Image 1 (cartoon, rainbow, N blue to C red):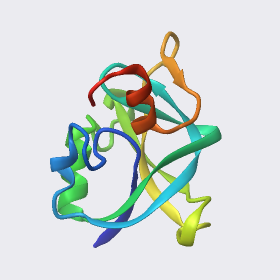
Image 2: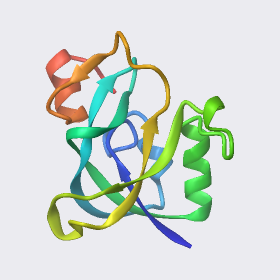
Image 3: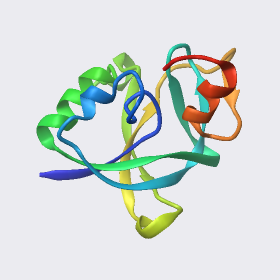
Image 4: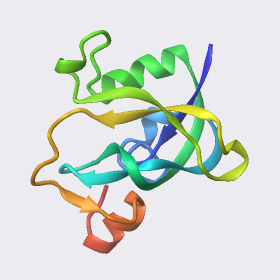
Length: 131
C-alpha cells in the first residue's frame, strides 16, 4: 500500500537523514497547519496555529515502517514514542485539502526554541547549523 507522507525536517533532501527516504517518490512541496520547535539536532512538529513548510512523498508500507523506527515511534505505544504519526491536511499547492501523514513531536516542548516561520531549512541556515 502507498501512503502520502509530509516531511519537514532532517528527512528532506540535503539534510542529515535524507538517505532514509531513498526509494520514496517526491510528490509536491506543501504546507500543513502547525508549528515547529527546535528540540536539538532536529525539529519537532506541533499541530495547531501557524504553517509548516515541507514536502510530500509517496512511501510504501516497508518504507513507512522503517521511518517509524527512525522517528522512534513505537507502534501501539504512544507514551513510549518520541514522535507519533498522525494525519494532517495540506493547505497549499495541488494537494490542498488532501490528508497526509506526518510525524508529530510527542514530548514536552517547554524550553524548546520556536521556529516561528515553520521552515526548518531556513532555520538551520539562520542559526548556522548543519542538519
